[in-house]
Every structure is written in structure tokens, then in C-alpha cells.
Image 1 (spheres, helix red, strand yellow):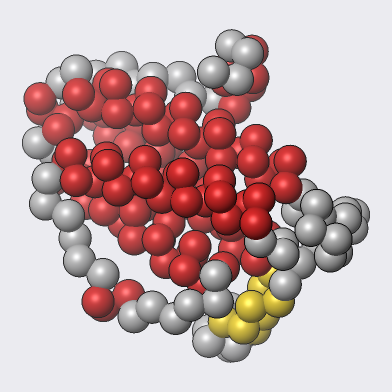
Image 2 (cartoon, helix red, strand yellow; image 1 turned 120 degrees about the vertical axis):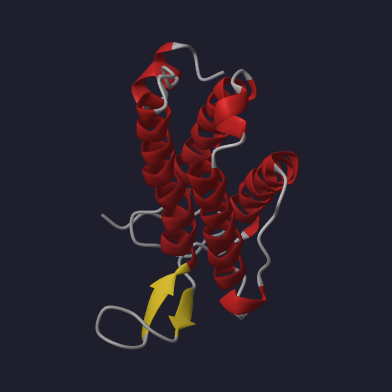
Length: 167
């Protein structure tokens, strides 16, 4: 399916509406996870969860930079030590992606230096979608870790968010 973006260019199935919906869903799901994290000191101190949250943040920042056409050296990105720093940065990146979705040419081809078969190009829309889907995957891993530690994770399925009226 090829859809016309709000900016007039063509993309490959990525629409401003779809990406905006997914970004809003992600913001809600992240808030639900942070609510549970804040409710349990053991989770807030868990090195595995903190490491994964840092990884999610790195990827979110890196993919958004690529979507803007910027080159970042992943080695230059520093890990945040405190959970509050991670949470604040993740909230800022979510606000940033919402702005990027509305102001980007989603069909613009971005050259990427490496991939499954060497260098390739991806659309801005595909990079922004990857940023959202990547974090969804790791939220699931954190939910699994919560269960390992005896804590019931929040239910953050897209359909639950939808059924709640997209809060």
C-alpha cells in the first residue's frame, strides 16, 4: 500500500496518522510501565531493567537522529545512571518523535551505512516506525523481568489502550 503523506510526498504505507497513533500509544504504555516501576523499589534498582531502559533510549535517540539525516556515533552516547534521568529523557524523545512525525517527509530516503545485506536506504517513516516498534519489543522484555521478580506487570496491549479511549 502506498499512502500519501500530509506533506505531499509518497511513502510506503507510513502515514502521519498511523505513526502519531502509535507514538501516543507508546507514551501511554511507557507511563504504565513507569507507574509499576515507581511502585516497587526492587524494580527501580534492578540492573537488567535499567540496562534495557538505557538501550531503549539509545535506540530511540539514534533512530530519530537517522530520520533527521544526522549521523551519530553510537559509542558517543552515554548511559544514564539514574532512573529519573532515563524516564525524563524517554518522555522528551516521545515528544520529539511526535513533532518529527508531523513535520517530516515520511517518504524521504535516508542512506544507512549497514544493514542485513550491507548499506541500504530506508524511508524516514520506516525509521520512525522502527523507533516505536523497537521500544514495544523491549517493554515486553521488561514485563517478563517484572514477573521474574514477582511483580505483576501492567497490561499495555494496543487494544487495551484503544478500548480505554486512547488515554
